[in-house]
Amino acid sequence: MELGTDKEGMKKKILLVDDEPDILELIEYNLKKEGYDVFTALNGRKGIDLARKVKPDLIILDVMMPEMDGMEVCNIIRQDRGLADTTIAFLTARNEDYSQIAGFDAGGDDYITKPVKPQILMLRVQALLRRSSKNAVVLPAERFGVAIDYKRFLVLHKEKEWTLPKKEFGLLELLWSEPGKVFTREEILAHVWGNDVVVGDRTIDVHIRKLRSKFSDELFVTVKGVGYKFGA
Image (cartoon, rainbow, N blue to C red; front, side, top):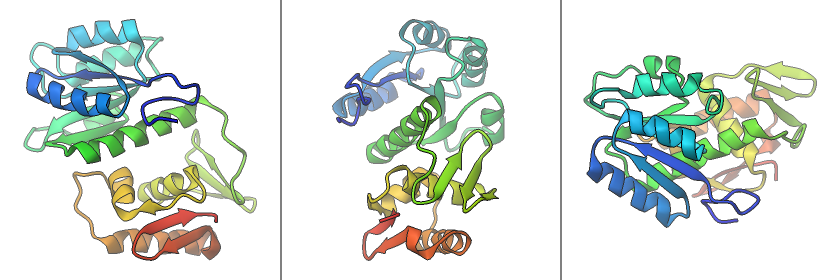
């Protein structure tokens, strides 16, 4: 299955909304190169109209735009029954007066800071689309004795329910999503911590150690010099 397609071979649709043509062009180029079907809009109103027309799987939405900012656009999209479950990631410059909490309160699922490296952006897009796909389909009850209840934000293991801190949950969810796949440290940092937070390799190790203490050492396999994998 190609990166930009779903299980049926259909291209994933991504809508970019930003008032800066250069940024639109750069992100569009990199997404199309990975096989995504990309649509662009230079302002919020056109973005809303296009979203209603194409029903994208993911909207990458600039926060600071004239006339209608990203927060307002997000609120309108969330009130549209046909788009209520669409994944939305805010795009924001580091020096903007922007509150992450305000973004999540407006209905955003994630935020990406400018300038963003293309490789990091692709990893974030993959993570967001994988997350939305999990919410749309019925997942296996468990994998190696571990089940994730996304609606209640719980992990189920050996008849016990665990409420994990956000980063532990994100790390477990990532590894659990593809048992046996080795996730590199770079992938883990991009998916769980994002490109806007500077953390060291030891941070991953500490969180893995916490997960092992709660579940089982054997569930989290260290691949020396590379990263970690789940289950086998």
